[in-house]
Image (tube, rainbow, N blue to C red; front, side, top):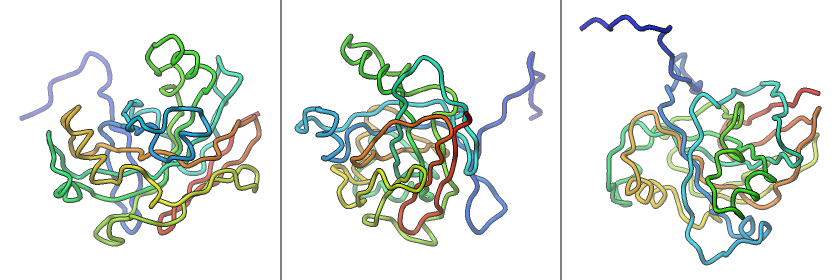
Amino acid sequence: MSMPDTVIPALAYPTLPVVGTDKVFPVRRLWCVGRNYLEHIRELGNDERQPPFFFAKHADMIVHDGASIPCPGLTKDFQHEVEMVVALKSGGANIPAESALQHVYGYGVSVDLTRRDLQMASRKKEQPWEIGKSFDNSAPCGALRAASDIGHLTKGKIWLSVNGVEKQTGDLSQMIWNVPEIIARLSLQVTLGAGDLIMTGTPAGVSQLHPGDKVECGVDGLPSLHFSFSK
C-alpha cells in the first residue's frame, strides 16, 4: 500500500548509530527512570524509600556524539545526569521481569540534561516536570552496542567528566531497580514497543554546566559520548 500524501513534509524517526554495522536504530519513544541510584536520591534530598518513577522526553530531543549544544534558556542551574540507555527491539504490556531481557536490542550511554531550578520549582508546585526535563537537545545519546555482541550489562563503571574533571562516578550494580525490573514496571504504565529507549537513572555527582564546557561520559563496555556547549 502506498503512503498517502501529507499536508506537510513527512517526519523522519530520529536514529542512533550501532557499532559494527552501517545500519541505524530508529527511535520511537524515550523514557527516563527517576531516582534509581541511592546516593543521587540523597544528594537531591529526596525520600530514598520511594520507588523510582518514569517520565518522558521527546525522541527528537536526542543529539549525537560530538555535538555542540546551545545552552538552553529559562535556567540558571543547568545540570548533567549520565545514564545507561536500554534500546528495545520489541515490547508489549505487562511484561514479566523474567522475560524482559528478550525485548532488549542493546545498550548505550546517554545524558539526561536538566534545568534543575525549573524542575525543583515544578516539584514544589506539584506541576509536571516537562519544563525542567523535556526541552530541545536535552538527550545526548551515544552509539549502541547490540546485546547479542556484549551480553546484558549488570555491572561496570558509569562516569562523567566536565573539562577533564570527573564529576559523576558509580557502578551499574548500584541501580536500585535493574533493567528487567525497569522494563517490567514501565510496561505496566505504557505498552512498550520496538524503538523505545529507556534511560536507567544516574549516580551521584550531578553538577552545573556552563557555556564552553566539554563533557565526556561512558559506561564500561560501551562507546563513550562527547559533547560541548556553545558559548
